[in-house]
Figure 1 (cartoon, rainbow over the protein chains, first blue to last red):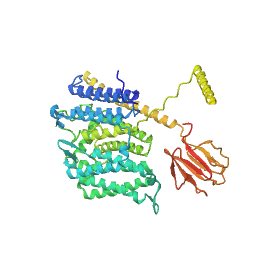
Figure 2 (cartoon, each protein chain N blue to C red):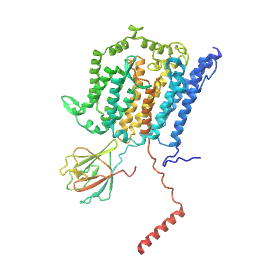
Figure 3 (cartoon, rainbow over the protein chains, first blue to last red):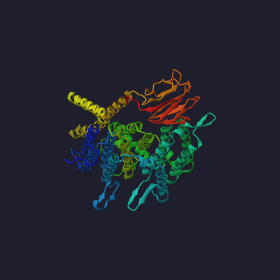
Figure 4 (spheres, each protein chain N blue to C red):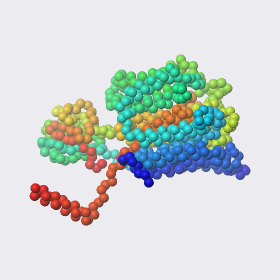
Length: 476
Length: 146
């Protein structure tokens, strides 16, 4: 039996997390059986090594949480594990040759093993941040440094970014390729939390009256205009509509959280409307996006192809879906919907799990939203509260944007579905968000238990001691 | 329906069922959390300890529990009533906003002091800070009940 050597670290049971994780694991095992049986044509578990490795990793991080005994949220981690597991099931079901990467000594990894590697890394990031981060001064005190780092990252992408599918958001450093906008989102939230927490009273209290309008003071409009400019630049230079929309939406959301002033939001929406019209006028990409959103069937074999096929996938799914592994994209054939593993993962899941599965997925994101805002509401101070709200907004708005885009509720924007879509940058970025949320949710040190009541004998002895003390002092 | 089809359907429905079971267990827990959070009575966590009162009321050493919005003054409708000729009828106001107490002067004749400095606008007050109204001095303390 080894006792932890660090002072103040005591194991603490996390019953709720344990039972939720067990339930998630049971669901994933049944899902895996369903997939393997459908594919094999008889009851089979296929090759369960991927799922086993994933569940063992999740269990190991749970044990780490228990051993380190921090009083963090017990719901977020199981929800994330279930989302990641669904992702793993779906990637295992797609054609493995969709994505391949030479991993050196490990040989060539295909889609599902690659996703497993990123999922495990993402869970490890959550575990590390949730255990290690006890102090937020490094985030709080260097907000302008973080902002500078963010802008540098953005400039690097502007200058050296590589275009993939007409979108310039991939940065290549040697053999590594990543999408810095995933990291940028978090840096933006950290900066905004620092800035808004510091200027909250000023922003909420003062105003500039122009006739009937109650405008925020001019000096504090500048950050809003800067954000607006950055969002526009991201669209124009990177052609990344999704990231721009997300940045601006998170910014407005946080501004409202910090000040509770609807005039800011109204002004921001006005700016967004002006920006949209401007972009629509100058950017052909935006025009195409809007056109295929309004009527994808006009270009059913051209630019609207993806949306049309996506809608068909939702239709094929119906209420209960075709079953995992029984959807149109056969494991060895071509994809029914382009980008099924990334942008259209929601459509693919809705085809195989039906409306029931899709609604369950939305439910999981709602759980993350509820927990995140709960953590924000209980935040010990303004910075922590705004930071938690921002991290939650990043995750949830992103999920909402892409799910609504797949459903043709809003124009399609290329953001990823957190923890479900294929992709390392996205998984790591989402992992950082959840890890920080967990660290922020720490309820702190428990108040020490009240001292046990004295027994009759002890009471007499205590009285005797105090009498002796009084005598002592009187003599002196 | 063949035995295999029954098996596949069973597995598919079991998977969806377990997803919803997970959500249901979560929802029950979250609702319990919310109920617990709302049932906790909202009370302001603060009290004023009387440090000095030349006029005699309130008594030095007395603690006065504060409400979320507490006015201090000579009038009887104040939360904290001071019998002090140098205090105005409605002299100052302490408000608990979110997590912090704020002090503001209500246009009193002699002003309100926070740690010896005149208060202008709403200023945050920490526990242990000294609030002076007329000749009466208070110290802000955490409420005894919490």
